[in-house]
Image 1 (cartoon, rainbow, N blue to C red):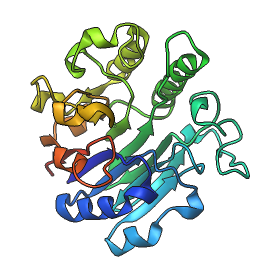
Image 2: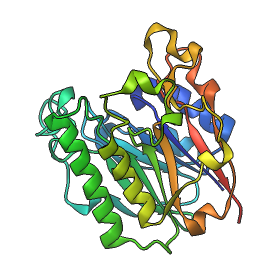
Image 3: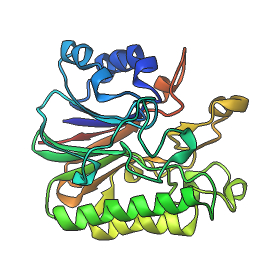
Image 4: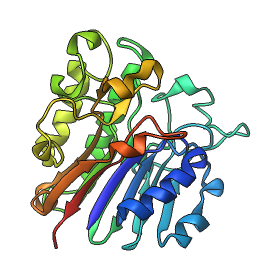
Length: 275
């Protein structure tokens, strides 16, 4: 069983590339982030034609998460079960009509379902923008909500896998130059502590053991040729409970999917599970 995650940075703009990657990589489950679509505009039919069911949680122009599965989708949960994200007439949410408003209200950043016997969760954590701002506080509050959802509704012994754009580099090894990020988001002590809380609950980073080397990144800025220089960050992750982690036989990032015409700024990340 292959489970992948990919911040597609607009599913509408990147649909052809996603369909192509599904054929090439053949994941059984694909977790997507930043779809930037309403639920009504989600491309259910193209995914069905490729053999996948699609569960989508969106709010229009911003954010949006989805799960595509060819091993079934059941028991879907969105927004931690806290209720719907209300779309405005402009296509954004009532609290996020501007792209800078991340983390300040209910947003389409979490969807979960049971696929092939595993509870999978696709997340798109807020960016945080800058330290000591409401956006940064909103990011930490969102992580607090994620941890509470795990602690209140799941159990470490469950079969669970959380994947997505966490917008946190857990270690200095996960950024191309730690000095370049001093005083910045994604690497602050509080953000790393929020991620550590997930591990303390019982989740395991199932990718890093297969790739302990430096330079293994999942995101590169579009500007200044950063991708070709490999000036990136590892902010996309796959975290699993120990019962799932023990089944992982391989983990990889598809750097080729970041190349070519109109790519996302993130590369897909996937793990293979035995059994």
